[in-house]
Image 1: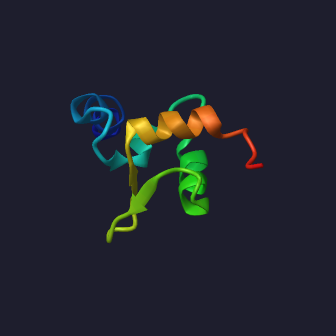
Image 2: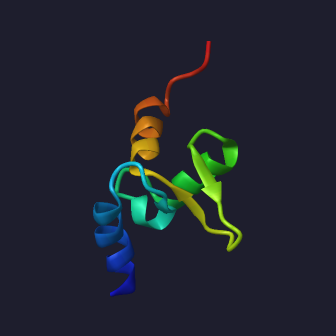
Length: 73
């Protein structure tokens, strides 16, 4: 029940610009592990809290998803 709360309810209540834990932003097309790796590499705008949990916004994930296969030139 807690997993469902974090996955479905928290992101909808938080809005697009509020920091939420990465597991709540994971979806079929982008897993938690993929988001975490992107955050660690600096490709996803995110921050790691003092508890070790990565947090980001839905907006940042959307931007990352749109640009994730583009290379810098």
